Image (cartoon, rainbow, N blue to C red):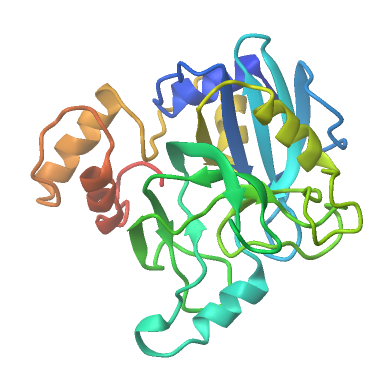
Length: 288
């Protein structure tokens, strides 16, 4: 099953998930469980994606840049889940360290990415978008995939957005313990061509670093949910961390009735509301 991503469909996704459109010109999007039908060569008016199932070994997600001024999009193959080997290594740890060292970012709207360097100061360090704030993420005590039963945390696990170190997205293998990664190779002293970004990462990097923009907001969604929403004649309201508005007030009211949330009905799906929503197990209410 495939679907199209363009300026109009992205605006619809923001509206359906009740996330206000960012003021920034460049907006990032991640669609977990989808890949572009054609290799991305640059920004275009649209891109077609197909649904796939993340296997934690191949790059089976889409990461993209949407320019709200030109309404063009760049959609690249990548991953929004960690590699299986890292998950298994972390799950094998004992005691309080069990599961630590790897994580999976929850779907949501995050505004904490800034230009910087991944593995800063190390031999394999290279340009990236650094996580500078807190997000929701899960740690796993078992082999992937992650589930809603895995422990939920809110903090800064340093999940940057960087090159995957996999030039051909169809081949197995990528470097991530929780970071978001884009297919390609970075400019790095450890590589044979140390002064060259390669693959989709080159285009992604050039689009970001040509901009004077300081922060880069990211909307991360499950691709299957996004496609379903876009194909519904009258899309039902969906929510995620970062949503705002009347639908969030309804959720807050429902959580208060269940005695899971005692905060205000301010229409903002923040930390306390998301934690309460997670504790509810979504019994009888919405998606997560």
